[in-house]
Image 1 (cartoon, rainbow, N blue to C red):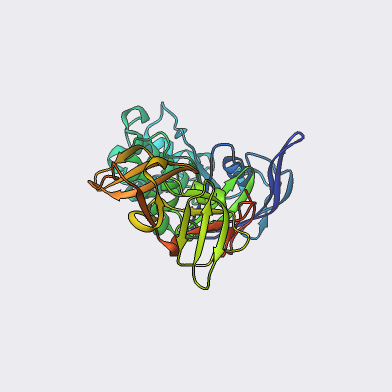
Image 2 (image 1 turned 90 degrees about the horizontal axis):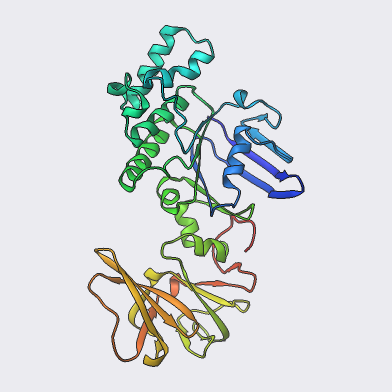
Length: 367
């Protein structure tokens, strides 16, 4: 399996530039997820790697080969699409055998490879069925089998799970992760679903507006976002952002004055250039001593009860905040609301949205 390297890669449609100087190394034998909102350029980047879109400027290498002008069929990539792209009139066996048949592979070898691949994907009992007789998850496995049988250098997945229901998505995520480890494959997976990214990826590439915002392991990005966009995009519910007016730093503590006059006491020093405080809902607790909100300055908007936990949404003078509570623990109905913030898990961002004082060194781009 091969590494994929993009150097200052640009994509233009006429005068409109949609990908802006992408520099990216996608490690061999790992599963890399391209993650971002709709329109960020992730699918365009994937199609450039596949050869389905031309590169306007820059270089693309698969392994040691420069492949800018190489035909898609000769790049060593196999792509799995969102809509499966199976031939409806052909059996599972014939769908999986098709790439080998087009290469002129002998029938005996085709038979052997199809059955070996079907065994890995647990498709052996389904080889004589037509696609219409399969579930969504089974069809997706057939599409994966058709890609696997080519023995490609790189597997490309373009939102392959978006048509599946929630239960099947979980099963297919586990299936893809298992196959990647078993095959030692280089896989590039496009999604806008952060749960897929966090559970599947060895490496996540966060994209926005045609730029790479941050590259790293899922938990590294979650714990050390490079900028406000990444911090807000990763995590559900999103990180709370609290803009502030001023800071009074002491030796190992600070008082942050929020917009609207409320103050947060923290057991840490705040960077001089910080303008926004960020904290995830799971790092905000009721009953702490960091922030006290008078009764007449907050409104409870509602709660999402998820069984073992609940997210409470509260409107404050400076904006909304989300708090994670154990199931059954309600917010106070009367009196002041006292909140505790885990000072070690508080993030700070400057006026341009860049993260301050955090160990995130694999970054590019700003919000």
